[in-house]
Amino acid sequence: MLYPDIFKKLESARWSMMHDIPWHQFTAAKISEQQLYGIRMNAILEWSAMPTAEMFLRDNQHDADFAAFISIWFFEEQKHSLALLEYLRRFAPHYVPCEKDLAKVRFTFDPAPPLESLMLHFCGEIRLNQWYRCARNWHTEPVIQHIYTLLANDEARHARVYFEYMKRALQKDHDKAALAFSKIGILMTNARLNKAMHPTNLHVNQSLYPKDTVNDQLPDPTWLSRWLNDEICFDEPWEKKVTHGILGSLSNLLMNRFESMQALHQYRKLLIKNTEQKKEAVYG
Image 1 (cartoon, rainbow, N blue to C red):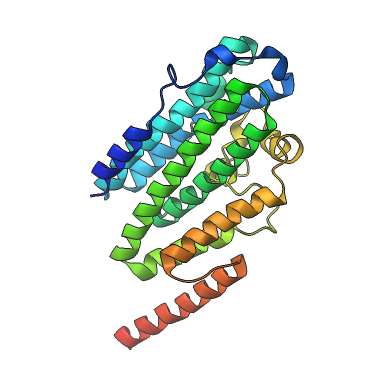
Image 2 (image 1 turned 135 degrees about the vertical axis):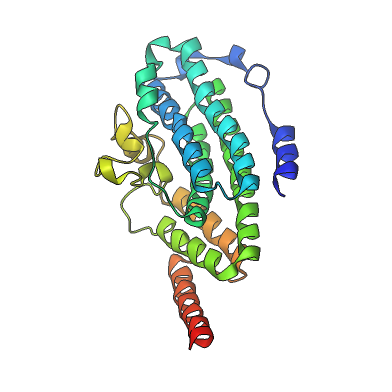
C-alpha cells in the first residue's frame, strides 16, 4: 500500500492555520476590494473539493488504498477554503460568502473512468500550484501572500502523490494506464483551447449541461477567466510552466521524451496501434 507512507509525508508537512499563518502582519492598505472579491470567489471554488472527493470515493470503491489517500486530500483541500474564509472573516467580513453560495458548488458529478480522473486531477494540481504562485506575486498584502504560498505548496505535494498512484497504475496495466494518461495529457496541454484547463472548468453532469461545470455554480461564473487574464495575469510564461510540468512528468512516467503536446499525441497514436496489434495477435 502507498497510503501509510503518504500519510507520514503529508502529516510531517502539514501546516496549522492557528500557528503557521502570520495573522498579526495584516496590512489593510495593501489589499484592494478587487482582491478581496477574488479571495471570496477562490474560497468558494476551493469548497468544490467536497463533490470531487465524493466522486473519487464512488468511482474507486475497488481501491481502498487510493480512497484512504482521498481522506487526506479532502481534508487539506477543504482547509484551503477555510483559510481563505478565515482571512475574510477577520479582515473583510462583508466578503464572506454565505452557506448557500458554498453549497451550490456541491453537486453530483457523473461517473468517470478512474484512470482518466486520476490524471485529470494530477494536471489540476500542477496548474493550481502555478495559479497560486502567480496570485501570491500579484498580491502585496503579506498575510494573503503567505496563505497562497501554503496553498501552492500543498497542491505541489498532492501532485506528487497522484504521480505515485499513476506509477502504480502503470505497473498493474501499462497499456491501459498509458492510454488514459496520454489522452488527458493531450487535453490539458492543448494551448489552442480557449479556457483555463482545470477540472473546475470541465463538464461533469450531463443533466445540467451546459451549466454543469463547477465554475458555472459560482455567484460570478466569469470571475475565473477575468482573475487569470486581467488580474493576476497568468500569461504565456506561466502557462508554459504548467505544460512543462505535465509533459516532464509524463516523460518520466512513460519513459519517453515529450517536448510538446504534438509529441505526446504521436506517442498515443503509436500506443493505440500497438495495442490493436496485440489484440489481433491474441484473438486472430
